[in-house]
Image (tube, rainbow, N blue to C red):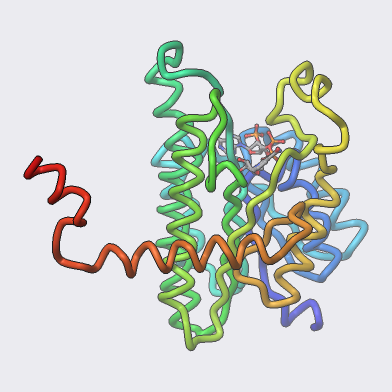
Length: 266
Ligand SMILES: NC(=O)c1ccc[n+]([C@@H]2O[C@H](COP(=O)([O-])OP(=O)(O)OC[C@H]3O[C@@H](n4cnc5c(N)ncnc54)[C@H](OP(=O)(O)O)[C@@H]3O)[C@@H](O)[C@H]2O)c1
């Protein structure tokens, strides 16, 4: 596709990690870019590099997505700029810790960025994409949206929300040209990890940000709705989906399961 046809991609969290690689790969594919993050200096530097390297237009958009006024400013841009054809909701933070040790303010901050901003920006983008019958929404969740570790309680809860939201949105856009992809990375070497924690891990379970984004984009090109960049056995996801569908169906019985009736009458 020519540059003019690709349109503009918005990448949140583009100053580092996966977002920075998304910015590079999308610029290489000919997208003009809007790069969102708090660190304007990093965005400006990246914008210069990418526009020079790939000849695309790159606009830094400094915003703190934990602030609703900044999220709203970005939502306005999404609504007003008809050139936008792709939104990558990538910005994210991790506040690890057990419930007994976590500060509720930190949990609310994580929720604002990882969940509330994703809701708001998805709500801004999809109606526009549907009205034009064109556009792609990519939401970055995590394998921890499908499970949890002792220290990931609220992070997992938020990523579970993003996973379910994105699956449900896919249902809504069925039969249109609008695409919605859920990406669920596993451990990837980025700034989101404390260096000591990352260094203590078995290097065999750690992916590079480049590999993660390249796999996610390959999944998009292959037409996948859900991409697990590091999961070799694709059947695992099919089994998961089938089990979830069977559970939903099993819940539609309209009466208490016999084991509860038996227990209630014991
Ligand atoms: N790395 C992993 O192991 C892993 C695994 C699964 C899922 N993920 C998910 O992948 C996504 C990208 O994470 P990453 O690993 O690339 O992390 P990262 O290297 O820490 O980068 C996070 C990006 O988000 C931006 N960001 C953070 N807080 C923000 C805020 N309040 N407002 C605007 N931007 C903000 C940061 O920019 P500024 O600091 O400049 O604002 C940065 O560009 C996240 O959603 C994360 O949950 C990561």
